[in-house]
Image (tube, rainbow, N blue to C red; front, side, top):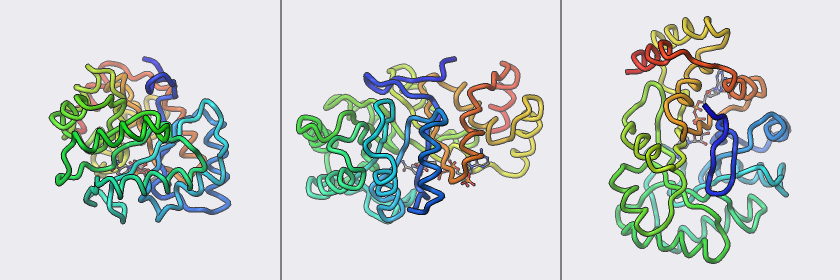
Length: 269
Ligand SMILES: NC(=O)c1ccc[n+]([C@@H]2O[C@H](COP(=O)([O-])OP(=O)(O)OC[C@H]3O[C@@H](n4cnc5c(N)ncnc54)[C@H](OP(=O)(O)O)[C@@H]3O)[C@@H](O)[C@H]2O)c1
């Protein structure tokens, strides 16, 4: 199992950092500096996170970015940030999101730009055409989608190359199994969001029992299961703790047995 994954022509390690709680504090700036020295070189943000502070803090702390760091962001969701916030994929809205993200992130080109939500009122052909236009203008390098079904992904790929999909997925939340399988078959990076949330006490106890065998905690076991689930999986656990960040990177050292992988799959079912 490789600990790395390709995003287009770039290669990153298969544990990233989610930043939907990141605000501009000295501790969080320190966390970001620590992140890039700790083996994490994929950071996920969005226009709507923490009222813009997530992107601004990343830009103010890390720009100009090292060559091996991918900072991904998203646009096309009406604030505030929430699972159920609707998409707005009008040209005016998406373009102003992108321009503002570039300004906050202090970059003239976003490496991975993800459509945060599909807008049911705008045809996908039009939205993908606009994202392709952003590529032609040099403002974004690669296109990703978020919270999409297989049919939407298949349709979107007719209009532009899609390198990644970011959907709600974890050991205990498998509604997007078909999307994971589609991404795996088609070499598309699958970025599970909420990779750690949604574990009840009984599941946590069962995870910890397996974790004890590997001398790791239940969160690390849940991430190890995700890495094993597909070679195209790139989890982005969100943390504001250096210790947790290091634990999450240490997941690369866990080699789950086939038997434990199967038991974990059952626990989450
Ligand atoms: N595309 C979308 O629509 C969408 C929606 C939601 C989220 N996202 C993205 O997905 C990322 C991940 O989601 P999330 O951060 O909300 O949820 P998550 O990663 O599933 O869980 C985060 C929680 O886990 C804790 N944690 C992290 N590592 C840990 C460890 N090793 N041990 C114990 N606890 C640990 C964090 O607390 P500590 O701070 O104490 O570590 C936090 O309470 C977000 O940051 C965001 O980038 C995308």
